[in-house]
Length: 226
Image 1: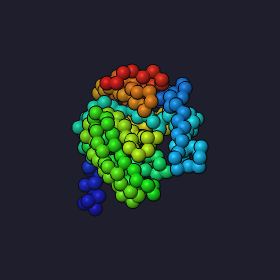
Image 2: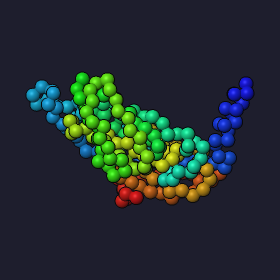
Image 3: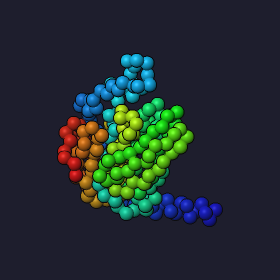
């Protein structure tokens, strides 16, 4: 019973007393991701890779994240860094976009019967995990905020993005475009939207205590990178 009460106390005090919610919608007026067709060397002659896709197949909102561009140093921020996973399966990265808080680790298990290699040339986190076969994995920690583009040396059609955000206040929109960031301490913040193809949008927001702040983003109208 004592442990239960202690756990409830930690939960209560980890949520700011004067906090509100940011609610909004991301409206996408046209496809942002170009059709991608890759000839697969392992497929029958003239075959198309399993990675081939059309604009209609792509969930643009799954390639989007909305986040507060600061670490609020709250208990929830300190607790969130975690282990996420991007699987190499069917010669593709399964989870094209993964959003993590700075300090989190991402694992890249290989489930294909061939060797893969995972690397990035991104300035915020350049790395090369080397070549490894099915059944093995490699892990790496992401410390600095920003998008980290990930590729495979052996299969140029493979690509994914680890989007590293500075704190725990972020959200990926649903298929309707709606998103919500809950329990934000009252104050004024820079809210950023990032889309893998379109780039960044920025909005200044005022979060009221125990209230809701409404925000709307329209894509494609990306600004330059911060």
